Length: 494
Ligand SMILES: [Cu+2]
Image (cartoon, rainbow, N blue to C red; front, side, top):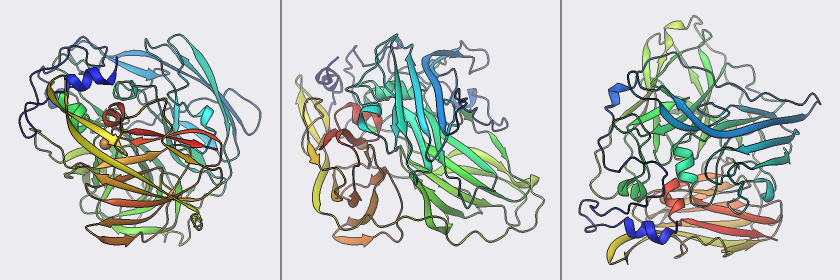
């Protein structure tokens, strides 16, 4: 369907009024569940199981330095709620989340994608520095029943915490909220933290109707981004993490939610940030009481038990991101319980002072500006909202920006809307230089590799970025509903 149709459906009775009665029957989802039904009570989903490890995608190649595998996307019925009908997810290789893809710097990778969905799909390798034609652009759909092999080499220095998810035209949001997303870790053979026990925590969002079926998006989901009644970790509801007896763990955390912001906190403990999307920082940043992980972002943390031997919840605290309309008030969302009673060690060694190298990308030769905005408009005679990049909705046929290979650029990203939006640029890791809010410019206090950065309402973020291959790259808001509604642009690299 065309975007125009569902913008018409996304009608509002007034800018501050309740979101709408009129809903187009054609809601961009294949679910037959009518919108607006009551949701399943959140205590219906069992909690408290032991945190499971995400199975690894097996390497079918015996050649050193080569990784070869198949990822099949298909419907998956899971008896998720006791006493209810099975919930139909869409999953990679029958796993929720998708299997862990573990790679090393320098690897030659060939992953065949088999599409057993009823919609076209692609696999986007979120954050990886790989050529555009291998990156699952919406222009390269794999049709239902089709397959294609994605091939790329991982450069030295690419160790980091990535993920993979679909990126087809219009259906990314639905395919992701139905379960299609998985973690991908690129490892270095010289990782100063390699000796630590490591936890992979993939946080996803789930919205179930009263019959335990995945609920379709409603008007409010399109407006604010979809947030269900559940936040899952490794597809489990509030699992328990028995902490390593040595008292220190390395956590990699993915925000794979469509729109849920994770203001992470572990009450009574501080967090030490050691890595962002694209790998390790130069030095640990210790003493954090909270960390805001926006949709699409990843971090690496070091967690120390210290002297505590209790159980405490890792939670997503309330973060005001400017949601519009009559939304239910946010509450603190427990993600998992950390059980420190298993710790036997009495002290932990000092962390390495130097973790990695994040060299300054250097002087920028070119400046560009990307402006996120929203516009109330009249579509089909009703008020609707549009989410825009540089005053335009996404058009697959239009090139919005042009860059040159290997030319460092300074991008000024401006949020002229009332809501936070996480900006994501494909194919590269950028460096945030400074933030500007209310006329006050604040340089970042340390360099980091990122592919996704959050912008508060009225905030300006300046980044240095460079593309290494010619071709077409996407940049967009990583609230997936906003992306679907047109908050996306195209960069042509020449
Ligand atoms: Cu957005």
